[in-house]
Length: 107
Image 1 (cartoon, rainbow, N blue to C red):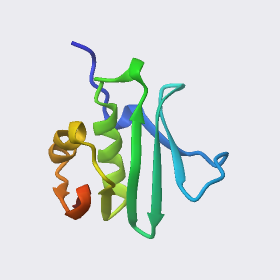
Image 2 (cartoon, helix red, strand yellow; image 1 turned 135 degrees about the vertical axis):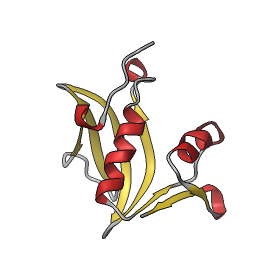
Image 3 (tube, helix red, strand yellow; image 1 turned 45 degrees about the vertical axis):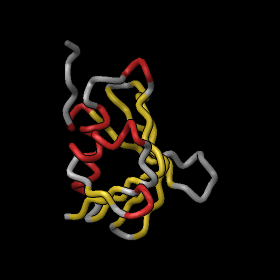
Image 4 (tube, rainbow, N blue to C red; image 1 turned 60 degrees about the vertical axis):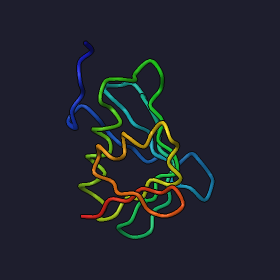
């Protein structure tokens, strides 16, 4: 079994090099970039359009630790158009199903 990371192992850094309507974040662990987030921020609400953990870093709890950290910053997080294979993850993270395939968490 691989080691599970915790929130203290993860850094979420805004990627200002991306020029788009989305807010991009890099997910880092130690000195490695292990994933990325594409989102829309509106005050204390974050809509996650996509969250990706790179294949070589999967199954280490990185996405779970990342979402837990985001819950400390935002009062509402929307997982936009969740794919069927990701539904279980969002449910485990205490997100509730909304219309249109979105899942939402509120503090």
